[in-house]
Image (cartoon, rainbow over all chains, first blue to last red; front, side, top):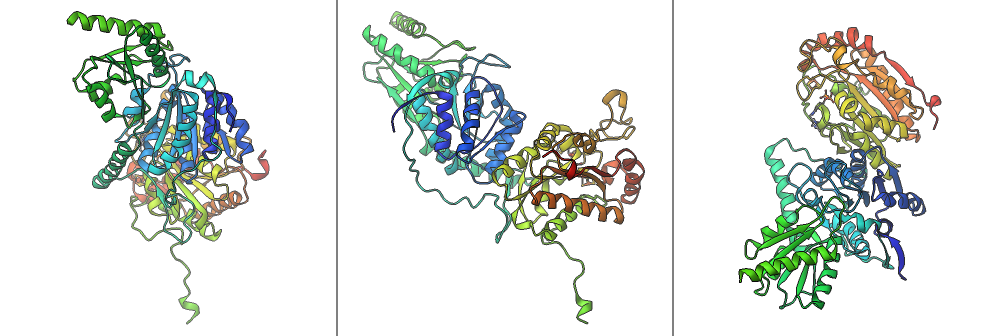
Length: 359
Length: 253
Ligand SMILES: Cc1ncc(C[n+]2csc(CCOP(=O)(O)OP(=O)(O)O)c2C)c(N)n1
Ligand code: SF4
């Protein structure tokens, strides 16, 4: 198919439809409202379901009920709305239902602002809701990648019967880029959804629940989830390297829009004969631990620099993975301010100066 | 002889053969049965999905012989909305207590009712939080003693109890809202009629139906099962008048 110029929010919305996510519930919030507006027009054309709920609390729970039918369901929001969905995400994960959620992150905490940020990393990757559960998190850095990951997300959600979050930032949502949609989507076959609530005709009732009053049964459920997440860690790790080579002195770790800016930084520094590589996690959970450790351990790497549009959240995972083998530094800006290539370059030069001063 | 061995009373197919967990004298069990009888009589069981609340009836899926979802506290109408929008061919009902529906879930029920979602809500009003041990509910009567209003509900402090059926009946969209009670055989028969009617209307694709059922909580009211039935008659009925609050012909949709 030919490339078309599309705004990120609309491209992701279209990708959801292409992947069969034809059942969508929403509540307006900047900077992702175009997803809702686009799907309000599109869903009737594809015989889908579009519904604007009364709050993100309700929307998260509508998605919960809808997912129980076994059909593919989708919702989108931005940071404050995603906070309200944490209740349903915990229940959905506990009840093992597949859903796809888009978070187009804006600055926080509180009402914060409406400009791009990456300050929901902890919430997305470390929990957010109560209980021992994980959300599979995929972070695109281009609109094409957002489309591709959204399509994949529906399959991954079905495969593991778990929520999958596309975690983007306001830049990905608002920017326009040429994108291409696959003519057809070929997915490996999945087992039939015998767990879905479809009416107890000729079978025992299906009960979709997360309550286990017997502690041994509840622990069992958490062990089932744990084993599932171990499988996810084995199979769903995604990352990309940019100009990673034996000459690199600094390894940048960055994701989403920020990673893209870091590519510009790397290109410009290359012209100044300063060699820097980029390690870009695409899956934030599962985190690409082994691959990052391998790159950070290379003898030529003096410093690992994590760059985020936050006050430093993913950097805690980088420290966890690097395990003190190399100094892990952080640079970030937040509140809707996107670091410029010059700011990041300055930071790298400063790091290299202090490195050589140490001798 | 043939005649005499005919079964005239049995467990409805829509209920399972299990031991109750409800307290002695609790009328949740009667209400479960009335819903099951209605599903049986209308032949709906095999295409029904219930949504359980958080409250004493959180385990109601252990009793029903149909598919069930278990919602977070107060969110059953949102789950029912999502489910029914994707499966308009199925019959969906929520079963909710007064803490669940009228306190934490007030937004969800009002908006589901107002959108005219095509499911049925069985709203069990016992004027108290049963499961957590007898705290004040939005439906607790003036002067009624609970563990969080030990001197009785004070209207100056927390306002008047909410009459949910009347409140929802102010909305144009819902098709049928009735308040019933189950404290006497005569009331049980009437309650059954109302519940069946609600499911009938849903099967005809009419929008939102709700039956509020006044119910007992002897354990947390701190009185005997027998006295609880009298308490319903004397106190609950006085504040919560029975009857149809909204008829199908009054609906706008
Ligand atoms: C978010 C949340 N808050 C509080 C609770 C605790 N809780 C469980 S049941 C309940 C009240 C239920 O009362 P009601 O709806 O009147 O039902 P009943 O038990 O009387 O049948 C509460 C507050 C909870 N489970 N979840
Ligand atoms: S606590 Fe009250 S509502 Fe709950 S089962 Fe006992 S009597 Fe029934």
